[in-house]
Structures are given as structure tokens and as C-alpha cells.
Image 1 (cartoon, rainbow, N blue to C red):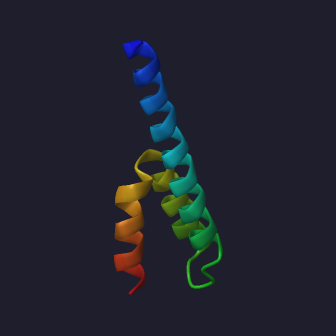
Image 2: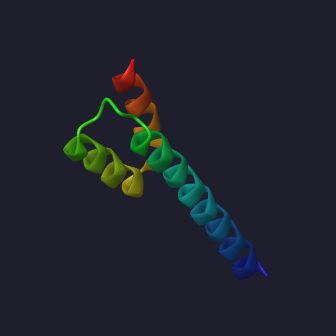
Image 3: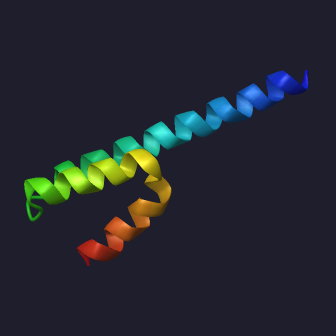
Length: 62
């Protein structure tokens, strides 16, 4: 039973990670002020830690 709970938590974390990375991808791709290299750098960072780098991206845009 504990295995199912652990698997459910891991699954929810993966879904949250995917949704956050997708949100960041959309925001970065829609920003016309970024160069292609900058967009690719932010998108790559979104694959690693999307929650952390979303905050860094918002600070960099200001």
C-alpha cells in the first residue's frame, strides 16, 4: 500500500513539473525581446527546475 502512495506522489510531482515547464516554455517563446539563444537557454533551464527558474525568469524580465 505504501508503494502505491509513493508512486502516486511521484506521479503528481512529475505532472506538476511538466505543467510548470510548459507554462515557462509558453512564456519564453512568446517574449519577442529575447534572442534565439536566450530563449533556448531559458527553455533548457525549464527542463531542469521549472519552479526555481520561473522565478529567476520573472526577475530577469523586469
